[in-house]
Every structure is written in structure tokens, then in C-alpha cells.
Amino acid sequence: MKNGLYSIHIQMLDGVKGRASGVIILRDGVLLGGDPYFWSQGAYTVRDGSWKGELLTRQHTPYHDQTARPVFGGREVTTGFSGTYKDGASEVFGTSLVGSRSVSFRATLRKIADS
Image (cartoon, rainbow, N blue to C red; front, side, top):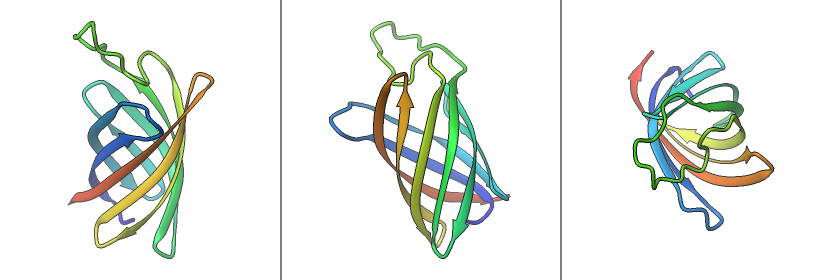
């Protein structure tokens, strides 16, 4: 993964209904990103077309829709991920620890700007 700004699209797996989209900045092993409700910070390593990392996610803005049940809502969530990349795009799989529950996901990233 090269330094830059990436769009990210996340789909929860294992029967969990949830998805999210946002942006992530990758720069020299540091990851920063977010969406309208959550922000994340973490670290990653890159090697031979693959990469892996970990991040911490926190909510910064409450949902206005009282019927919404965000998977990460109101919690500090830790996540580990790994994936592959090529030509400014990446696919990763990971697991987030939400309280005492593990939630698996798939995410796709696409580079949208250089850093």
C-alpha cells in the first residue's frame, strides 16, 4: 500500500447486518480515518503485495435516527486485519472485538489521492 487517501467500503460478515463507507489516510505505517459517525487510528505493515494492521475505532457523533442500531455504537472497538493490494486497490478481511463479541468483515479500498 502506498501513502495516500483511500475510500473504504466495509461489509460485515457472518450474518451481521451492517456496512460502512468512509476514508482512510495511510502514511508510513500510520492509519487515520473515519466516516460521519466514527473515527479510527492504527498502524500497519506492508510486505510483498500484502499488508496487515490493527486499529482502534471510537464514535464521535451519535446517530440521529433513534431506530438505528450501529454495530459499534458507543463502544471502543479494536480491530485486526490483513489483505492484499495491487494498483491502488486493496481487499482486506478482519475481525473487530465489540465488547465480548467478535465481528468479521470484508473491506475494499481504492486510492483516491496521493499524500
